[in-house]
Length: 263
Image (tube, rainbow, N blue to C red):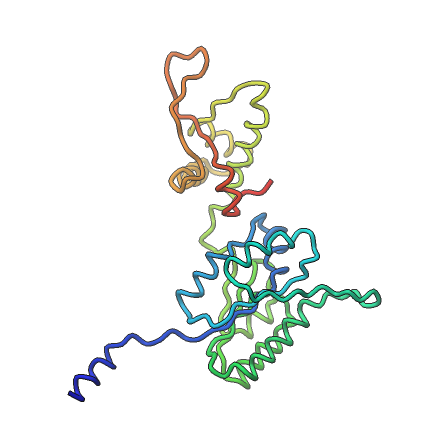
């Protein structure tokens, strides 16, 4: 009987590493918008972490008095209610407090959350190099840094146990998506003067010519937009034509919600 119990224990899957995540949402939101014209996909990122770790806590830090970031509170609350407001009300000292408040919470958790194996820091700021080194060398923790691509300190990247940048490198089609969508938006905004019927091949040719990129890349990107439901095709017959064509229509709401297009 005892041997059966031991065999069952061996067959059990090992538990996931326990993790706690600290998010500098100002870095994520502002850098992603400025450098890549995207919005954070908070749910997808949370799900990515949950697939790898037993996520004990997910803590967001930001100055939500910023009118650009304040509307994001509702989206953040869909994944976590642990939100730290970092607004600095001092009139004599104008340095943003987000980094310092976030650092304080990380050090506190390092001392109290003894059951946590992995510390996830979503930031690109070099200020976090010291705490990363402390967690790894003094506390024996694994420290993963998530940051916006092209907005992460090289020193922080070199100190962390691992670094992941967003958008991921495999999002190579993103800029092609935006070229196509900008062209579609232009056609839509001018459709009041003259009805347009954008179809696949002319769109590929026009976008490639305007942006000086290969037609094959635009064709692949447009096909992916269609396959993923960002663009739909309907059979329509242009005025004065004897045959119908497949006309492209953008699902703008889905494009904005998934961050691949912003007005």
